[in-house]
Structures are given as C-alpha cells and as structure tokens.
Image (cartoon, rainbow, N blue to C red; front, side, top):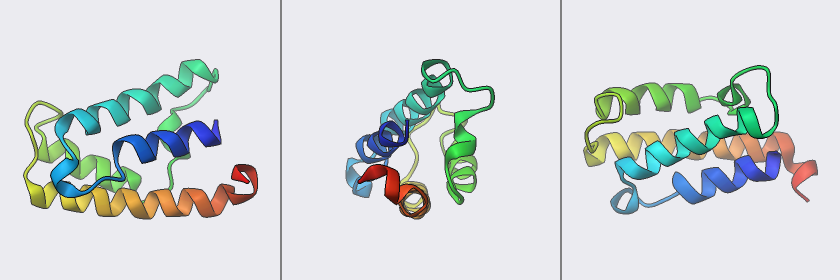
Length: 99
C-alpha cells in the first residue's frame, strides 16, 4: 500500500503548475479513496497522508468550487507545494518500506 500511495502522489500531484489541472486533483482524490476498498481499510485512507495534505485539500476544494471549476495558477501552486511537503514527509516516514 505504501508503494501505491507513493505512485499516486507522483502520478497526479508532483507536477509543474502548468501541467496540473482539475482532472489531476480529482484523480488523486479518487485513487486515494479507492485504497479504502482495495486494502480493506477501516478509516479514511486520507489519514495516511502527512500534513499539510489536509490543508492542501481544503484549499483546493475551495479553489475548485468543490471540484467543479479549474483552479487558478496561484491555487495550483499552493496545492502542489503543500502536497510536495506531504509527499516528502510520507517518504521519510516509510523510507525503510520503499527500499
């Protein structure tokens, strides 16, 4: 599961601002949520993502009108920056399982 989460981060959110779109945000959310069923998790798989992932998600939800509008570049930049921090923390936490 750790490897799968790493792959989802890399595929959908670790992008340049101009390459990141509403679709990527939606697919990231969808793929992370699908882990609950795939790995039979009792709690939300979003709880596995280190901060500031929750803050980033909240900001992007507001910027996209809950996923219905393409965010502006400033919102994208803030989201990507926070998710990159979250990703780096995730890698640090699970480095021994990723080797």
